[in-house]
Length: 94
Image 1 (cartoon, rainbow, N blue to C red):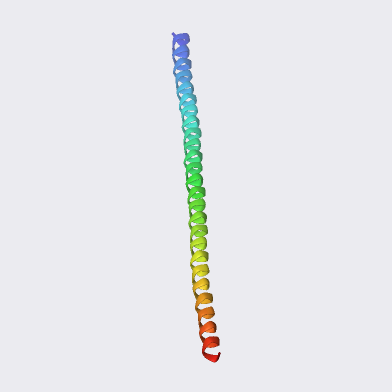
Image 2: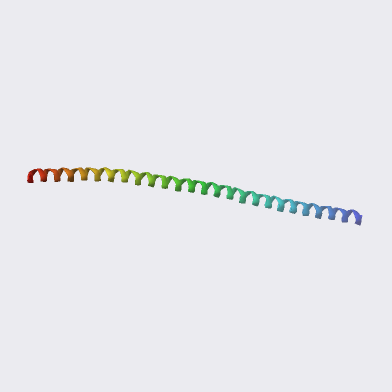
């Protein structure tokens, strides 16, 4: 009788310990999975940020090139105007 009770108690304790261990392992796995997911999400965010930075740099470079082209055209027009003015002044003087 006592042996049966002892065996039952031991079995119950073993079951409880096993359930606790299983729950702990599951929690650990869940934690690891959550951490991995967070890492992956952060990696995605980093990739997106890098892509955004690259796009911004490209846009800035394109804008700078366009500005340079505009400035060059304006400078050319100004130079042409100056040459025309000088030619006109010289013609008038002559």
